[in-house]
Image (cartoon, rainbow, N blue to C red):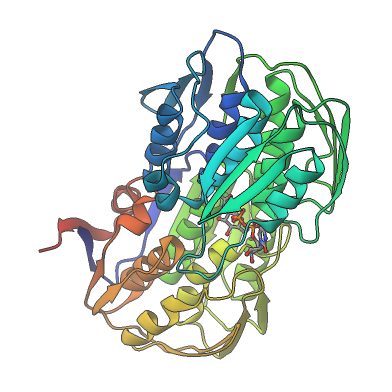
Length: 420
Ligand code: UD1
């Protein structure tokens, strides 16, 4: 296990380019299963993060070849021959459930382990399964396993009870090879859904409507290889913006899509942060931090749940009392307890957190429970007085490509060390 050692109190300064989005990369890597041509799918702007390695192993376990060169992946599905995802890999990453749609489309069957809960609360897949059934899959659940099979998917009208990101993506990937037309109502509108649509269409799919509430998909017989560049990661960008603001720094983020961060920028401005935007950049300028009345996490274009923890670290040192309501996940406040170890004043009641801003946090040893909680603790450590140890950074490595290096470039005093 590794940890971060942070010497707090240094304002971040400088500029940074943001790499590709984890939450685009994962479904797009899964969708490369759909390529039935002998040529490779080429994916550019791939972040080199732990979740990428897990998805790579999953594809390899299905018989596919995955070669990487820097931030580019070449994926061949010529030898795809397995429909069963090993339990070990299923357990490592919930997103392995994304393979259901593409494998049903390509091979007519798939077997996965039930992904179950995780540290941010229960994460059911009922919407995925209901939608796949509507497309003509027969689903059997037995002893923690899900086996789905079909003699041929066919288009259908599907109404999602909730705009789940994963279910929308899984169903898009299944419907793209289904016979006839599929219309999916009440879908997720996240930028990563638009990215997946663009990728599927680059392979020859006929998908319309991503970014709106309704997707319309005309099934095609087969999909081809393509070369595709993943969109920049709005959650990593938001994390760095918050780190800059929490340290009273001035940071310019380049190569991003500022529109993807509208709700985040609006809330940060409400919290007193001065932010300047251009067509492809955002710049944080020093401002006086103040509390926000209520921040509620919501599906896109609302404030993203993935930035709730980093924003809590920022609000912990903002003047006044802020309220955060977590409406997406049931148990996503574990970082509050760790922030309190650093002298934050946060109380949690169910899905609501009350944050009474303090002048300064103090460094201590804190533990990461999940990816974004880890990012929040790093932000707190950078802003705190004294030294902070953030333990078990493997959670952070799942979604940030060497976060410490980006922060070092901006002048932060942060080192990676082995935990004994
Ligand atoms: C994706 C993101 C994750 C982000 C989340 C919400 C990826 C790889 N992960 O996760 O970073 O935090 O969107 O923006 O893209 N639900 C059900 N039944 C289902 C599916 C979901 O009840 O079948 C519930 C979940 O328990 C949760 C809510 O819907 O409470 C949102 O989940 P969903 O949008 O599906 O998130 P993920 O796709 O898992």
